[in-house]
Length: 239
Image 1 (cartoon, rainbow, N blue to C red):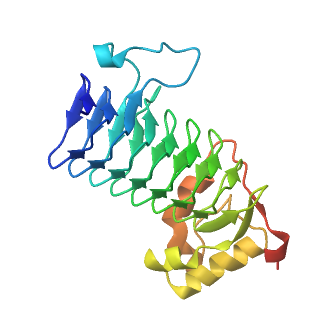
Image 2 (tube, one colour):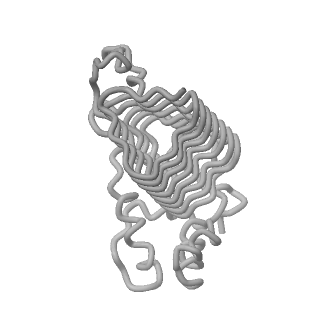
Image 3 (cartoon, rainbow, N blue to C red):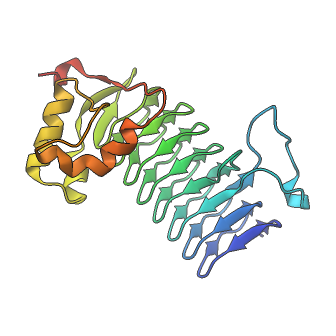
């Protein structure tokens, strides 16, 4: 009972549940699991763009790509990109009722929990974990390895390996467990914790001597975000 439209390229060992709708242009890579009632590939929710009937072969927009090994749970919604493919990274999970708007880039090994809504053009890094029912404002950046608390309205940009929660959202420390699992040393994690606690979100980070160099690959895209609007640091965490 699934509906697979024209322009959908499906890889090997893909599971698609009953009632799922997948519209082109769309690429589903190998080993993807798509749950019942998931909806992938509807046109972007933009009044300036045509709301095309892709199910009837009217293919427009920039497409969706679900990378190898990703899991899209039941009732999730992923929209077409406008100028780039809306992308779900390898082995990432998009849980039930979650929503990824047009042009979202979700990294590898990330988790978008149940009921999360992510606005258009957002970039979410590798190994990010977004808690249930959080809302991410359009054009926001969430750095690799960060954790966002349940129900948090993410209205500003989140640096790598940060823990962010509350209303308004505040940076409340470093995701030490995630950083350790990513292979970073205790010394590097301590240095990142110290910088964030001091209010230094490393927005102008350049390679320097010391353990922070371990985070260079995660800090480089953070430093290059245009019109960066970082979250504030919780007063309780300031040293």
